[in-house]
Image 1 (cartoon, rainbow, N blue to C red):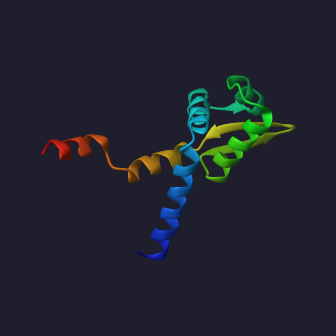
Image 2: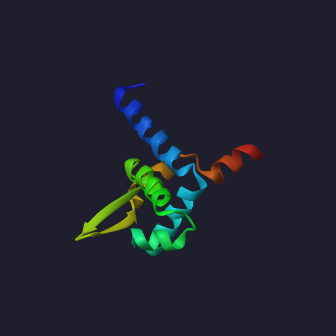
Image 3: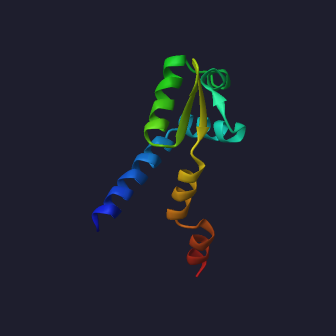
Length: 103
């Protein structure tokens, strides 16, 4: 494998690990559905402590899954849809996989 492919694969693994947690995938889906949420709004949606929310959001941000925008003292979170589309493009198409299983 070429070095660029190895780097890209490592990035893919980091994103998939971040999304492998049930709470983080739920947070990602809620943020994506809203378009953008403040940290307080994310906290209001989940029955978790503020430090736990911050921990999960940090993992998602470090993996590039979410983008944090600062406006004064507030932070607003949105999902990096371009990255998620890239991830979807590298994963096998489920329809194609089902067709292969039937054959």
